[in-house]
Length: 305
Image 1 (cartoon, rainbow, N blue to C red):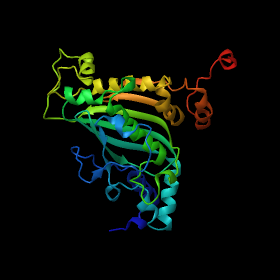
Image 2 (spheres, helix red, strand yellow):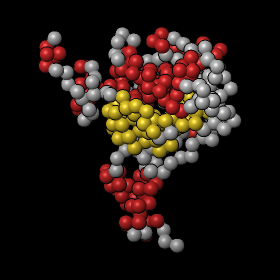
Image 3 (tube, rainbow, N blue to C red):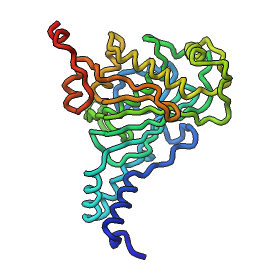
Image 4 (cartoon, rainbow, N blue to C red):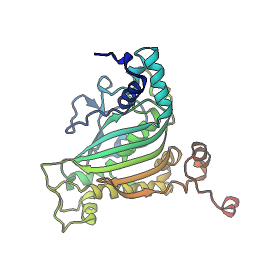
C-alpha cells in the first residue's frame, strides 16, 4: 500500500482539503459532563443578567484543535501543501449550540479549518432539546429591555468568539491580560432546528403569540417542545432591539455592527430574517468599510446635523 507522501500530488491535495473541512460529531444530547462555565473574559452581560440560564463550554482538554494543525506538523512537504490549500480556501466555521429547556446552552465547535482573525462564514447550528421553558422558570428570566436570560447567553457565546476565536479556556494569566483578537465574521448564520424526540410540538391552535406569553411566565405550553421558527423569531426580535442602539441596545449591539458583516436567522434551513447591519452607527463606519462589510452612509445633511 502506497504511503500518503507517495500518492500523486493531486490526490494528496484532495485529501488535505477534505481533512481541513472535516466535521466533528455533534453531541447526541446536551450534557454537563466534561463541561463547565468559563470565566476567562468579562462578558458585557453579567452573570446576574442570565436569570438562571447558563453556558457550558467544553473543558480545554476535550476541546477540538484546528483541523490544520496535525497536517502542518507532519513534515515540510505536507506543511507546505497544507498552507497552499489554506491560501486558496475561505475560512468557514461550524458551531453546534445545543439548547436545553429554553435555558441552558452547550456550544461545541464542529469545523475549524484553521484559526483566523477573519472568518468568511460562521454557521451556528442551534439544536433545541427538552421542553419549552416552564412558567416558573420564565418568571425568573425576565429583565430590563424585554430580554430573557437566554438572550444574554447567546450574546456571551458570540462575544467570547469575537474576542478569542474557537479556542478552549484560557488559563494562567489574569483575565485583563488576554489579548482581544477582534475577530470579524463576514456572514453569521443562526439556524434553529428541533432535536427533541420525547416531547411533542404544541398543537396547531397555539402560535407565536402563545410562545411569547410563555416566555414571560403566562403561557399554556408546558410539556411541549419549542418550534424552531418560534425561537428564531424570538431571537430576531431581541437582536433588532439591541441594534436600535438606544441607551439599552448600545451596550450589546455595538460589537455586532463592528464585527459582523451580515447576520441571518433561519429555522430548519429556511430564512426567517436577514438583519440589516448596513445602517450602522457612525462609530462603526470605518471598521465596517475596512473589512469590506455592507455600509449605508448617512446622507450629507444628516452628517452635517
